[in-house]
Structures are given as structure tokens and as C-alpha cells.
Length: 449
Figure 1 (cartoon, helix red, strand yellow):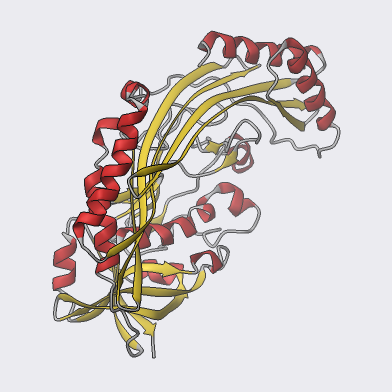
Figure 2 (cartoon, helix red, strand yellow):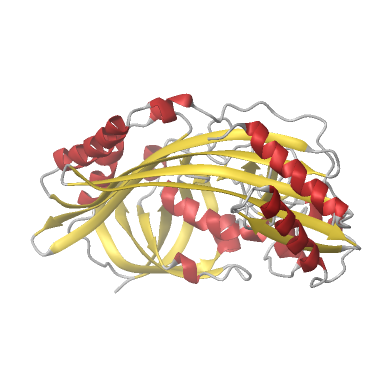
């Protein structure tokens, strides 16, 4: 990767050029990133991809209108062209008094988000990690028949932001991760399993544990069949609970509320969940994959408690939505890449862990369902919160997990589901940027045969 100074210089040149051409405010965002993907199957490398991308996104504000343009050409000619285009685009947007660029923050957090071991580890070591994950899955049970993918992935990026308000910032980050998808079979029956582990530290990846976890998830579902419709306690495993949490993330943004697209609009200070539930977005989280010292427009990231013991406390904001609501940005101006402007999005977004081990949550249930997989979550309505999903999992009888079940359905409203949670596990698990512990719902109707 080129020196940080080169990118800072290019960003300063872009801001200078935009201001010279008549911009009143200008902001340059540059990202330079690399990503490695290694896929292994049957002990052999099947795919290896190394992708590199760098580019500049330029936002210009003139007379309350915002223009945006991006380019991968960081030469003086390329910078001049992107500035000209951004200014031309100002003329095509509506005037809006809330368009503004942030001032530099008073201070920025020091975060441990770049592990040099990720880059220093030899490619052979990374291949070995994917192979050992596959081997561990096969060794777990002879019924593990097909490994669909055993993958190692890592990436690093350098982010630079300069604006005409005096901001000049950059940070370097890196991550690594492993994931495996497989199928176990017995007779005519086949069941799938997966597991993943994404981390900021290379030496904390545990391929053998991940391989065994995927195998366990598949094998325990062999022989699954539907059971009769019932009203029962429902336990959501951390992955399923995280899926439901993902549904409400967009609804907790100031942007969704202002556009009339949030089921949480007008509910600050009211109960929206059980008092066992606290939902947090934390851009500073130690070890968090989405942690960074500042967001996509240079605002320091922060820890925002959105729902505290069931009560809605507020929303996530970028500079624009915060100005519109007369509040401070929460540091949630998230960018997908240099090709887009900062939208409001989550960082490390999670339900806080409770104090009860999952095994104890199961013990207290005389009749229920432990849901391990949900199908059709994408069909849920993010505005009303209504959902109807297919579920599979394990039956709970007299405090013990018994037979596997599939072909069942569960429906309702996400707010009702959150309100009916009567216990929260102590096993918070992250799936990349989102996480949840095991959640227990006092009673739900599960439709079966």
C-alpha cells in the first residue's frame, strides 16, 4: 500500500480544487483496500482471489445543494475532473438547509484495529487454516458428506478524510475470518450446517472449533420432521436472534424515522421491548469488526444505547439527519465504499448479554422449541415489523433438547416478539458486525402439521 501521505495529498488537492471552482464546502474521502479470499475443497485450493481497490469520493456543497462524484484516477487530471463533476452534480439536486460538513472532533479514540500478523502470515498458513477447518468437520462425524466451502478471508484498508472545515484524518484497519458450509447425510436425509469466525486478531482464529461447530449443527438436524401446531416457549439461538436484530437495525436510524419508514417513529421514551432487552450500537467496541476511530464523514464514533431495559432511548445519526433533528451525530455516517455518500448505518450492533447460561434457559422449559434456523427473514416488513418465517430446530421436552424438527412456521410482529422475551442468555456471539445472545420467548404459536 502506498504511503498515507500520498492519499492525504490527493484528498487535499481534491478539496482545494473543488473550493477553487466555486464550492462552499468540500470533502474528500479516499479508501485503499485489499482483500484475499482462499477457498478449499477436498483438501485442495479451489479458489484464490486477491482484489485491490482504491478511489476517491468527493462531496461538494454549494448554495445548499450537494453534488457527489467519485474516481479511481488520483492524478492531478483525474482530481480536476472529479471536482468538476461533483460541482456539476450540485445543479441537479434540491436545495436543503441541513446539508453540512462536520468540524473536526475534539478528540479521536485510539483503537487496536490493525494486526500486522494478518499481513505477515504466509499464504500457505492461511491455506492450512482452511484445510484444518475442513478436516475438523469431517473428523467430527462420518455422516458429514459434503463440504460446500471452507474459506479463509482477510482484508486491510487505509481510509483518509479531508474537508474544508479543517479536518484531516486517516486510519488503517485489518480483519480476518474463516467460514465453512457443509452437509451431513444419513439415508435419504440431508441437512446443512455452517459456522464462521471473523476477528481483528489473526492468532485468535480457531479453525478446528469452527469446523466442528458446523458439523455439529448439521448432524444434530438429521432425521428432522414436522410436529403438530403448538403454543410453546421458543428459544432463539444467537444466530437466529441476530437475524431478528438485523431487521430492526435500519428502523433505528434517524433517516428511516424522518422518511416515515420506521416502526420506532415517535416512540422515544416508551417501552418497545421486554425490560430484559438492551440494544447497543458501539463503534468503539474492543475487538469489534466494525470499530473505527471515526465514521465515513470524520465524526468520532461512539457507543449509543438505543434501547435500555426495554425503553427506546433514541436513534442513530449522521451529520445530515442530526442537523434535521437538532441533535449531535452519533458517528454513524457509514459508507459502503468511496463510491457512495455516508448513509446512516449500524457499526457493532448487538443485544447485550444477560446472566443465564443457555443450558439453564433450556432446563426451565417443559415444552418448547429451540430455533436454530430461520427461512424467509428477508420477507419481513421492516416498516410494520410483521414477519412470517419458516423455522427448524430442536424440540425441548422436560428441560432437555430432544428430536430435530423442520417444516414449521412462526409469525408475528417484531415488537411483540421483543416484548415477550422473558430471559436472555450470557452467550453473546457476533456474526461479523451484529451479535446477540440466546433469547427466550415466553410463548409463541408454532405452526406445523
